[in-house]
Length: 445
Image 1 (cartoon, rainbow, N blue to C red):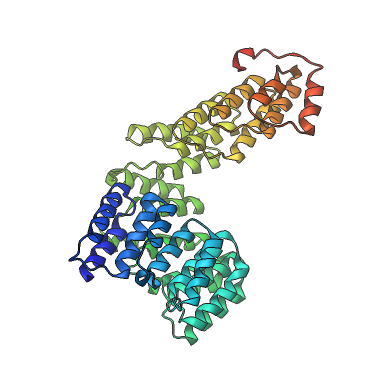
Image 2: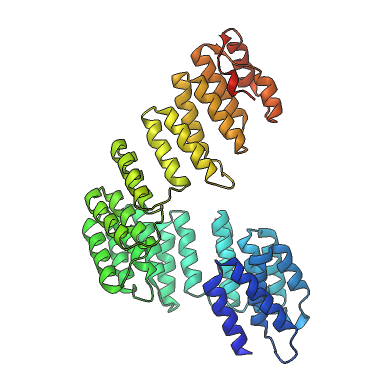
């Protein structure tokens, strides 16, 4: 039934972010399969498989596919399963399925090839791209998405000549270019310092921007900012405001990021004030951009005042807010404030994905200061979020060495934390054993 697949497609496009709704719709799909008067098409099963993968995971999606009638294991359902493998970055399974699809003549459209290009680019397996492109040309006709992905692969390799050859081939094959095509070209030219060619690409890109292609405007602003082209950044922003009734948080983030990159903080602050008046979200990612600018430019007093202001205006600080503030306090050697910020940051997340950069930076500062109490406190904080390594213990020991103090029961603590010693650990333990015992026993557990 055409209506069935139409409803499924509308739902999948609009509501994938809402897992509760997806779960409800998955149950509707399952009910539909039990109704004798509803004739489902392969495309309906393809959408159903995609929903199952998002709600119940890969294993359930594979089981759903295995249980399909053989007549339904066609191009659309196989491509849906392939998409699931790509999303999970399962190269072996994806490649095996592509071979099977090829054997059964199910590679008659560019979509499976586009999925595989996405996978290889994501995993940095760029050497596999040329062969895949050849296969797509042999079995089907590559579309604009294929060529744009090919340009993305060129960008990853900084291959200007290759990108220009792709564009020439698009013209030869009469493929209609879109704004993404020229966005990719402009990015490649900017990185290669080919400013004039980048500007030409941006002119072509802007011709293809429209109300229907709204995302193009943010890309234009960012790319003009990369060229330090203030005038065109302002022009595109004003064009957006005259074209669309209301700007989104994403678009405010884009213009604020671009203006701070250009160093125009006055205009950025003006636009931020505008966002405060119109925003109903109070999304911390927007003010975090200004906060980051102040800290990067050694304006800590202004950063603290701005933080107080954003909280007063109803913005709830996020993990990033606290981490940005921690970097600022670190530059001022205010270690107590650094640890306070990071403690709140850690507590704001269900699971912390370790930021090795900030861990090293904090320990480096603690080492230089010989702050054993701060180092012990930071170790406890990191243990509480499940991140303790040999490098961290070595940093702790170096801090004790700098302070001329001997740590307590380090070997026992490392064993309890299931952390192995290396040569540096043994060296530091021998070195610090000559010193007097440090006075931080209350922190040791």
